[in-house]
Image (cartoon, rainbow, N blue to C red):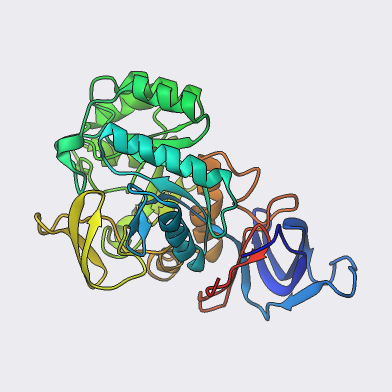
Length: 395
């Protein structure tokens, strides 16, 4: 994608917006910014040379925003380079993601600092594909009892001083921190994160219901990959899962791939997370975009077979996914039974609100950057625009 933005119009589309869906709708974009959203009949006249795209009844949706994604195309955010970041963002852009958080693993402090430095440098340049909008630190402040596919050798207790130092060096770069809220030092960390507007997320946690609620009282506001790597729901011990399900103020990520969570459990989650607190993620690792084989997640070996990623040395332990946002979106609609509008909120609007970029993107509204998707009635992706620039696979 080249240039600083485009000017075009899309007509005869089903345009999904926060105000509802415009039947026979239209979107006008000028210099990469949305200038009109409404019916095709009401579209203001423009210069004759402005490109007009006939959607033929396809949906126009906001671009997907993935707040929990580790990599793709053999590349991992934990070992970043310009070439690697281009490869990851290109792959996920081709699958409808227009903004994403570079997500780390539980790593040594020096490796985390390298990720922050490289992503900061990358974001200072012209990002040609999906836009990196910050970093999600998944660990190292997690529970040794629930490491999942994280390396337990690098787990440390929550450390507010580390995060403060990173935030001073790279203000606003860290958008989300995932940790075990029951561990010593977690409440201090939560208070600091919420003061700075950073998402405080429970994950890889052995917390009881009571410990989650105590963390919620001091600012915990999110949970990662719901139902995975957390204490489960039991009718006498609700655990982390029960606390999240019963607390509207805690938003919940879901990996909608039919592997991590049964569609009936996602349906249950969606029935209680009815506001802006249901968020689709991929948790995609370096195997995304590729096939069966041996890969790495952080510094741990992973085997992928039939889209199922497991640790090589711990058979049965899921290790990220090969999911893409368009596949997860389709799963929410086809298997879980969400409407296109509701699935779009989970994939775009809600994550934008979570990480506080909803003034820029996440919905089809005038004044926002033209991060747009055209998806046909069979939910197949047709076009992707990032800031008004049309994505071409060949670039």
